Length: 610
Image (cartoon, rainbow, N blue to C red):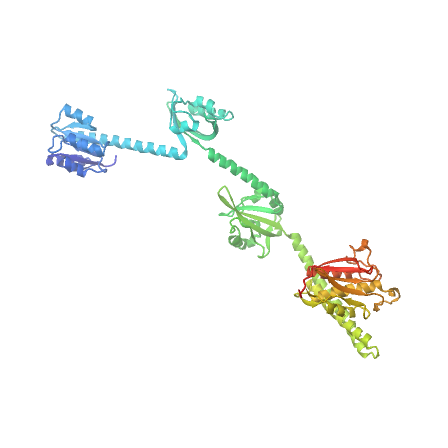
């Protein structure tokens, strides 16, 4: 037992001092003394374990002192230790709440007897106080945990339960609870055998149990409970069984919802076309994948789950991938975070082959846990297309270089030869020079288009009438064959618009000439017999001719590559018209002109002059 602190109140200081010496010699006691009741009350604190008091004292006798002590300390051990008392005094003292009564005597035995009485009183007081604390703690624990405690004595057939057990079963406190009867009444039919076997095992074999089963309370409420039991045996017989029962309905419902959530989540993963890998945000350990993931790596699921997420990638680059994940994976808090734009990413399949992938990731929360969810898309086919396109571009670049070189050489020869020609027909000669210059420009544009896809220029204001007139001079139209009835200025790439107009004009000349069959290869038509009009249109402009026109059944096909009704046509002209229009975001349609020829309508045009 721990040290016992005693307050001894006696009006005889010498006796009090001797008593203190005898008690403290035992080694268990610490004694403080007071000469009377009033002084004793001043010295009394909660640190005192026992009060020893004389009875016959001036001012305040021992019984009056006892009454005063009990007002503040109703359960503190109090021993009346007096030499002048009587049986009547002892009876009254016990009635007032004294713990014990001891008559003073001669000799030293009385001090040993006093020490035993004090020790016993304090031990019992401390035990009762500890039991109260434990009981209070148990009650609070049960209240917090929604758990009840029970005890069953099989020999007497008696059961004791706490209030929480009644509340779980939703019965009144006068209900007579018993293990076997409660099983049949409250437990789910599918769980009755489980509970009955557990109880019988505890009573007959001393087997403890801890099970989770379903009950139906008296009010019809279905619940899940966790019931535990610990049987105590002596001489081969069960003396009693103690246990607890706790309502775990909320927890089981959360677990069921979590299972449903995980099943739903797994269904989403398996339905995803891309490989998915889910890793713990703290450890980086992969805890789930989908069918596409096993197919991408050509490995079964149980070989993937449990790996560190960096193990999916080339082993020699593990640190680089770990650093990449630290910077990007999981930082979004639910926001998808693409890892595109970084160096090429790869995973390694079961054969050790590197597979290029693009990765997007986000952080998800499931059941309070955070995970990195990464989607991996196999881009092997895309990479192969990119490599093939690169090879094609390299071949095209080489081809364009050769072709442009081979075209420019004869043009330069032609240009030089024209300079040597002497003729009175200055107009025709000037037209030839303009044509050579135009062909040089076309070659430059061809090279640029082949290498860059389209010319890089911003739309600028272009006077439609002036450009149309210039195009007429380079496409074989005779003087006066073109009529421009619009003064619109449009926002356009002049080079692309020139391609559009020249091909429309050339198409009209080629298909309208009455002398086309008699011309030799390479001759330029003079455009006799065809007239063209460039006129305004709501949202654009039109180009119309008075030639033979285009049959309605052929109008959807005329813009296709290779379409031509002329033996000498390339089939590219009207396709170039369409491409030039689409480059600007314009629409082009063909219909019949007022003169029965072809009419091409270009709409969606932005006008620069309002």
